[in-house]
Amino acid sequence: MLNKAFVSFALVMALAAVLRFVGIGADSLWLDEGYQSLVGAYGRTLPDFTSLRSEPFLFRFENPPSYAVLLKNFRKVDPLCPPLYAVALNSWIKVLGASDLSLRSLSAILSLGCLGAVFIFTFTFFGLEAAIFAGII
Image (tube, rainbow, N blue to C red; front, side, top):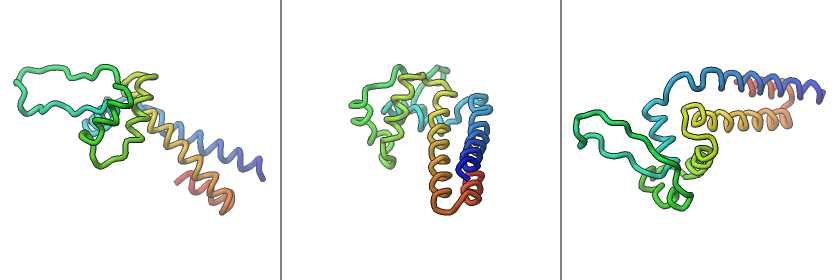
């Protein structure tokens, strides 16, 4: 029974990983995705784009700030969200950079961890069939 559960767990996790990572960096970040990811992780607000001159320009952040600066400015940037994800993304960017793939991969890995926890919890309390069903859903 335990061997069958392990194989089922591995298959559900492999399917979930494939669905999350295939094409993860194919499209560039959407506006809301880029704003939440970069502004939250950097702890800085964007400039007021409505009051700038009409010529085009490239807006890009430098290296992520320290945790102290991030936490100091975080409430100004996003007063409704807790800062744990921003701190995690700040660390992630320092290690892997700020490409579209690396920004999205943190969320994909965290969701795989949650899926594993749901599978194990469901298996423990409701059995293998319910765990497979919960994992696929």
